Length: 95
Image (cartoon, rainbow, N blue to C red; front, side, top):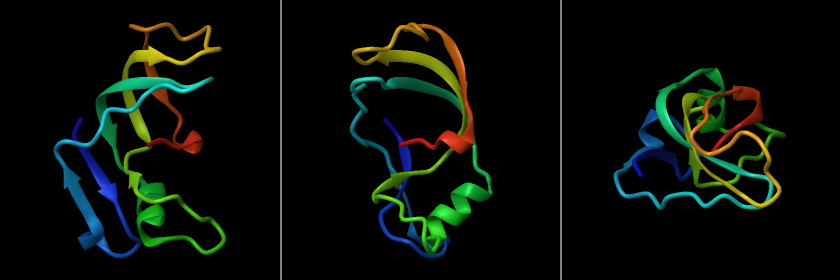
């Protein structure tokens, strides 16, 4: 998959385009979404800069506002089913 990835905190220059980032795998209780549309918001800026007291595991994929289609579900997930169209609430995080 393609992704814009933060490998270290800093200014816009720390954003890296990764054309061959590994596809995610749905773990227990998780859903993998094939992103159809994505927007950036201030949460992405704060994450990129690094927020004191709010550690972010790195590397981190940007983009919390997404719409897409469920590609896979992990064990224990009843809904949404693969093929369902979904949106992501940015307060839940991603990547």
